[in-house]
Amino acid sequence: MAYSDKVLDHYNNPRNVGSMDRNDPNVGTGMVGAPECGDVMKLQLKVNETSGIIEDAKFKTFGCGSAIASSSLATEWLKGKSVDEALLIKNTAIVNELSLPPVKIHCSVLAEDAIKAAISDYKSKQTTRKPVAEAVAH
Amino acid sequence: MAAEEICWKCGQLFSGHFCNACGAIQPPAANYFDFFELPPHLNLDAAELEKRFYALSRRLHPDVFARRSEREQRYSLDATAVLNDGYRALRDPINRAEYLLKESGFDIGEQKSNPVPPELLEEVFELNMALEDLRSGDSDAAPQLEDARTKFVAMREHIDRDLSAKFAAYDESESRELLTEIRGVLNRRRYVRNLVNEVEKALSGYVPN
Image (cartoon, rainbow over all chains, first blue to last red; front, side):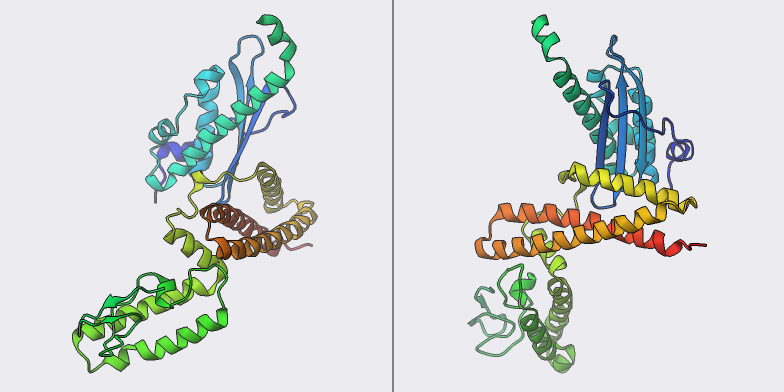
């Protein structure tokens, strides 16, 4: 099966590979995996404290070309979005952008799950961190 | 167990592979447990299965039907195919569990349906980092991989013990919830098995100088 040019491009030049300090309260970390193929994907995003915009995103994926491309693309799309906008990123958009064949759709699902996991990690950090400030605001 | 059916040849009720009345070979049951006339259990008596396999092999063999009608020859061929596939599927406990899950309407290995426990993912991630280091020629990763191998082999053994307990519990209760749990454990087992294979591959390719 041939990979699309876009998959190859992301695979050969993955964007935003790396990791951030997972203890940073502004960093959300999502770790997901697929039992069948043994893929594992770590995706992190950093939210600007004042603007609420995702200012950085990093990933590290062990898996096939499509899994790497899906997560690489996801980090590109995350930057500059608000957390709520990021939650709207759908795996189908990744499928379309990368022209993933049906057998590789699960890779895009994994990327979407990773985004959701990272955001939920970020949100849980925020709520445990600022209970007093929110109580005052209300 | 196979239900009673009507013989295609003589119209009598029968159950099993041959008509009790006229002795004609019957189309094989599609379900492997029915075919071997065994209860749909996860713990099976392997010796009994083997005994039935050999006995049926002799009785259903196409050579026996070489001079019978075309229809009987076809049933013999069909039955032999089910016999071999079924024996393969039921002989191994893991394959058997996967077969029973599939027959019970579960999707096996459907990636989205089964979240992997987060601690396991962390370990897998760390392991993959070490594998990557070793492949790129960093021999420092070797001891870490040896440790990982020990750990994941132990994990697989633990999973197998968990599975056999769950198998026994399912055979008692035939509860669907247990099947769901078993599917989760099987997925984890597959994950861990792949990891063990990866580590073994990396370590065998690595030659200390």
